Length: 417
Image (cartoon, rainbow, N blue to C red; front, side, top):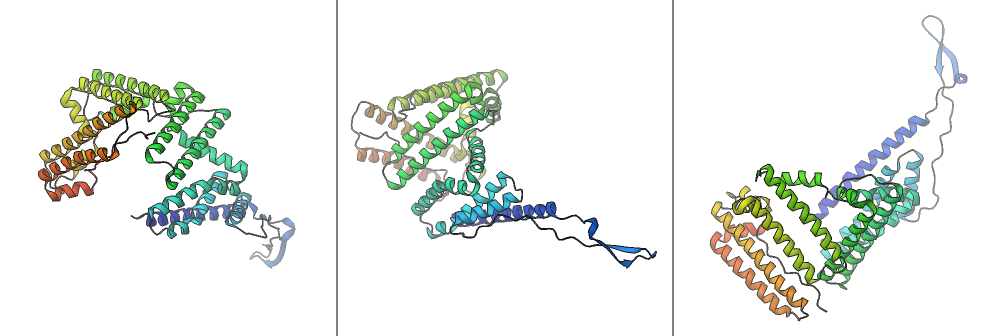
């Protein structure tokens, strides 16, 4: 499904939802404000079968409350605010008002996306512009109090994978942290569009922003609530690990060893990220992170054995799962699947080793010849690609590439001064 079709479908469904909300609100408003028959409004103009006068209710004229009106609607913001004020007068709650305003705002931008005509650069620019204008539009529609109430609820939901109890002061602090992070991401997205920062610089700046954000979140919540909010607490980790190891079927003793390894890994990773939060592109950070990951894998291999660990890695690899699922359709068998899996693992290992060598040279302030790097990377890629084509045949190779099982990566370097 194309971006345009997905966008149109989303808009259509949201408009239908908003229409239903408005209709429901209007009906409730009418029912609440419907006048009751007044005793003085009764008259006897007809006769019942028993000869008694027939009572006919004549509804008294009751003036309905006047909804807010706007004489001059000069912009989409004015129209949206009028609509929200009228719905609020009907008793529609703030969350539903925000939904109406949000959908109306997105529909307003629909034509700008259509004007891009599939141009990815233009689409990215329009998407960023919409994201950066959203807060102002929602604030204009809901008012400062309504916007803050809705936006804080949204930001807290995004900030915590598992909700934890927070007081008003903590909620406000987390909201401010999340908005600061959001603003930084907008700045980095703008820098990417303008070409004022390259991908490596943007990734480093983004990593730094997130590291600072998570550390300050931890300061606000404390260790226990922070871990639970980010699903790093022992209960969640244990349940998640059991699900990951279901096919490996470890014994209770093995599970406890692996769970201890996960706890140690997460603790060390958090300390490492905090240590290098201002310089995550530092070669020392990359080297220590690689050592941490290698130690984690070695512990798993020690507990499960080489064959058990190898089998676990296969089961957790999406490409391997896809090959097993579609092996008949893609012309594969167990030997070919294992060959592809092992070849791609070897390819990734070669890239990691090559990257480690480059980072070590950069740490020694040696200039890296980018043309040489590209040539060496191309050689590694060509060797792997040729081996896969020769073993699989062109047809199966093409199928795996079209389905993104076979993908060739790029080495990430820190920016050279």
